[in-house]
Length: 168
Image (cartoon, rainbow, N blue to C red; front, top):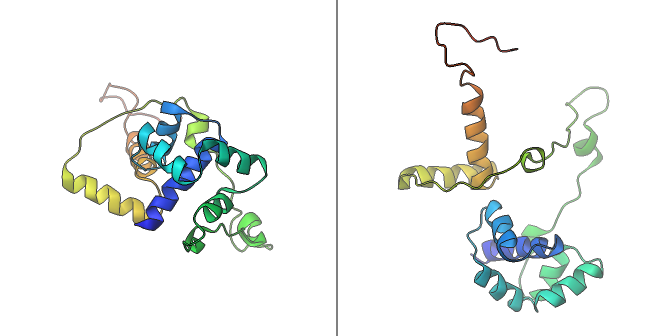
């Protein structure tokens, strides 16, 4: 439970770092998969010394992890410590072993986004929650991946008598 709270607080620090306030901050944190209200953000910011204190630490060059560690020195935050990638992870093996990993921009940066609220059966919600944990993604990212995959197979034309060329 404490790990989840600290992860949520890390997202709050990131929202402050990006200069987000009010509903923009709430939306940013919710996109990361955490239910949050403006009042909840204020409560967490106060527990970390306040927004001004967080901004001072950011200006001093502290990372989100360092800010959390300074705010809660009694907690073991080793599970959150960022691990720098190795050269092989960044560039792949030399000699053609594994493919080179490319940094793909987040879909948010490629397309205009719209917010959507849906009601789903409780068992489907639980399946999404479990699958997102297993894949290490937020629930929103998992749903976007599933919908993108499913919608990519839907024909673009309503005329079912005419075959759809995939390169049209």
